[in-house]
Amino acid sequence: MPLPVEDVKAQVPLVDVVNAAVRLQQSGRYLKGLCPFHEEKTPSFFVFPERGTWRCFGCGRGGDVISFVMEREKASFVEAVESLAREAGIALSQQEERKRSRQQILAQINLEAAQLYHRVLNEAPDAARARDYLAERGIEQETIARFMLGYAPNRFDTVRKHLVQLGFSPEDLTAVGLLTEGNRGPYDRFRGRIMFPIRDARGRFCGFGARTLSAEIQPKYLNTPQTPIFDKSGLLYGLDLAQQSIRERKQCIIVEGYTDVMMAHQHGETNVVASMGTALTEKHVKSVKSLTTNLVLALDPDAAGSAATLRGLEVARRAFDRVDTQVSVGDIMRLESTLEADIRIAVLPEGKDPDEVLREGNGAWQECIDTAVPFVDYAFRMIARQHDLSSMQGKRRAVEALAPLITDIGDPVARQQYLKRLAQVLDLGIQSEVLMNLMHARRPTRQSPRAVRPNDGEQPSANGQEQPADRLEKYLLGLLTMHPEARGLAAEVIDAEDFHQPLFRQAYEYVRAAEGNGTASVGESEEGVHELLDRLRRERSIEPPIDEEYLRPTVIAAALRLKRRNVQEEYEDLQLLLASENANENKPLGSQIRQEIRRIGEQLRQVNRALKQTSFIRTS
Image 1 (cartoon, one colour):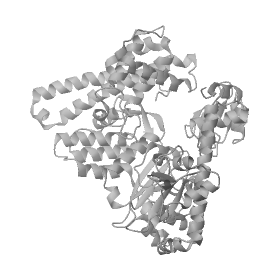
Image 2 (cartoon, rainbow, N blue to C red; image 1 turned 180 degrees about the horizontal axis):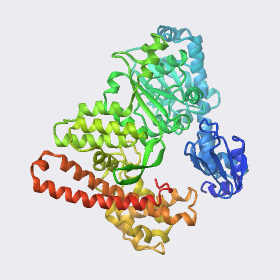
Image 3 (cartoon, one colour; image 1 turned 30 degrees about the horizontal axis):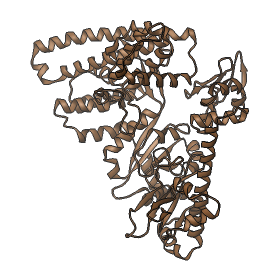
């Protein structure tokens, strides 16, 4: 039995749910109030009862009753549906109830274990070394209690015996990661270690981080393995304690270690969380973006110089919302999508981690945060180190890396300054307006097209996330899957070759063949097409439906954006070719390139003029 999504939407009035968090006032056929997700003095939050939707024109958030609960409670889609279903008395499937019940049991097991570890740390004689270590690190008793630090004795059965006596099964203790299997049966995973309980944003105990106190016990740090309730790639240490401060200070500082977070909170810097030594993921960013759009990554010099940091910046950019604004570049009018976030890098003094900087006093820490550089400045510095900017290949790669970062900048004056800086650094010899078009050519893909054109099939990125360049293609295909009557509209703008992904291209050819009736023959070798279209159909079916009057402009706008992406990529390649020394020396070639640039430029203007007419539709 699937989740009762439609029953929830039909039986749970959006107005009733929103009224619990927002004081709404009637405004014609709509209701309005102050947005609960960002600070404002003038109401910009609207509820549309007839459509069952809400939208804030201040922060850009919106959706249906389910998305409101997801934002309000920082819940997943499934958790939000289940919560609303229970409130409305809608029966959930036995499978979902069993899953929820099991998650509660596992979280309770972790809580009981955390309490045991905490008592051992405070009372047991064999935890004296752990207490001494924490005292040497300057961690006060109040901090130990607040973060519920503990100690796991160096024995094989302390946790197993205690929790089995409480009625929990060894199978559940193994499932939650507290036991590990041995030749003689399950035994305690954590032994002779300081224990750091890890809680999610709601304060539920999900797992543990553990640090050894002996060189004989390795590895130095050991974490709970992946479990039904513990996913290290989606948890930020200390977020449950930091979220109120993050809201109040309108800033979230991300460090790497447990101790860094505890020392920051001990010194009153309570808007600090940790990624627990992992690379920053979209899940991490999404867990804080409802609290603030201002992120500071506080990194030691080694981490600041690594490629992982640049990848973390790319992840953060993908996860944050964007806003569409109309801009003019030369004689081209277009709709640009810029990042609604301020992401900065605070590089700590050489050889010091956040813990050591904080010990010097809050002033030293605050200076590091206040002098954090915008991510574009940081990227300029790192990319200049990584590429040979004297070669055309190095210049191209630098443009590919910096293009999406510069086009993300909402302030047109700042953006213009960065364009001038890029032209100077790369010695391209082209005007800023041309370079602006060059930058914008990279914007729809959000990273180098060459990095996101796989040879076959729909390829996920290394961390399992959707490749950014697929989003335009995925959105348009989803529309055409749900609305067969609109397939002819898209065909007026694009053809199959406009899809970079081979599987997406094949799927488009299939839906075109099925135009009007939603069916077409397909061979066994094209099973991937069916799987892709079925998945897109499922994803689109849980989103608010598109009103009939908006379907045409929505489909056309989506197709135009896909077309614009491809035209701009061709335009960019020609601009870079013109900027090369060979083209300048070869005058016939240069003349031919300029002629082609004019042709492509006119095509780009035509697409932008058409897109301007549908600019009120958000298509990605």
